[in-house]
Length: 74
Image 1 (cartoon, rainbow, N blue to C red):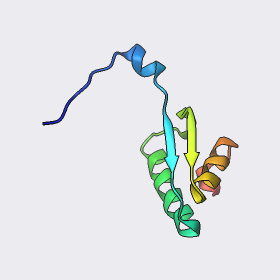
Image 2: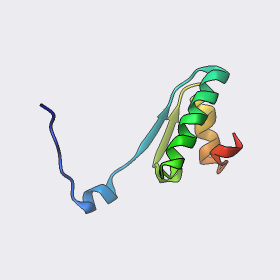
Image 3: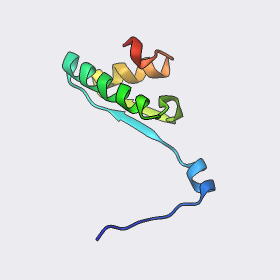
Image 4: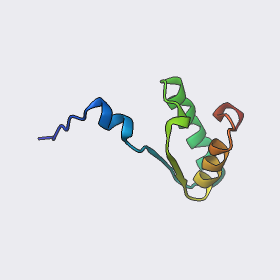
């Protein structure tokens, strides 16, 4: 049985959101770019994250996102 936790609107507004991206070289960049574009198409704003963390290729994408580069420009 799963556990469901309810949060108040105030708690959700104070929450910290972190995006974690992995490695994978050129293939990883291509895969993560597709995933990020899909998330944006579903309404997720990548600028809402308080922290972006990445390893290798993910660090490259995280740096581009925090620099204001749009996913469509990757």
